[in-house]
Image 1 (tube, helix red, strand yellow):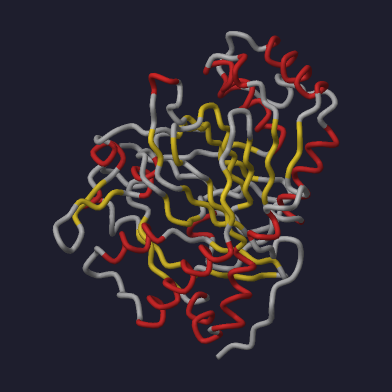
Image 2 (image 1 turned 135 degrees about the horizontal axis):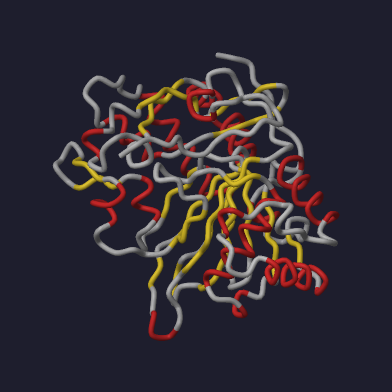
Length: 357
């Protein structure tokens, strides 16, 4: 068994502590709102996806942007910006404002194989599997891709996305549910080290995953489950920097392929303990309209509870999502190139590879 030591620093937190802390919460000042309005006015009619820092200047944001980057990489790994006046804008202007701000926080990367740089996260109904990937499980039931599950009103298990930072701007909240769940992965590491160090070793071994529904040449998961499979540990450390990349759906998808190595008993138990520990150490919060949640994927798991919409009353949940690669990002362990392309610190990386379909 490898000798491992507890991780330290502000990214190691328990939900009961962080939910009562203000270190990760910032309120936009009137001057910030004025700067956003001025930048938005200057780009009226322009394609939001073509905006850059130069075409969407944000005077007076310098200190806040530096604070955001530092807190996400060197602090708690999470941040909530409050006070975006989302009620002022139609969806086109919201996208311009949000994307323009995003170019100052980081660099947006592709979120799916069709090249979307911003994704509306809402319940898209029963067709999501046919559109975004589904296959059959061992019992003959429908197995939805991770991407398809995101676009339902169901709950989402703890996971990470394929990007340094995930940004979720709340435009409208559901009538009920849709609560955000966050957990510190360094804290999960430490809890498992203290309780089950034998299982911690298993989490540093390769788990086969499949990116079906994200990458591949077909929309039917049966054609892409094996073609997009790759091995990667759930936990990794390099130069004192921790990272966890995890999606149980991706792991389950890989297990559907006949020629993928099956999980060992220790790996299965390690996942069970990982999920239980994440639930124990997490905290929950309801994003309000105008809240922007930013998450460092390397040190934070996120999920959500199921939700119920009521469009007639204006409570149909809508979040706008950006995936951002960060200029101050951390180095990643050898072998992570399969997912991230670059593993050097400070280099652009992540997002979904573009293929023809």
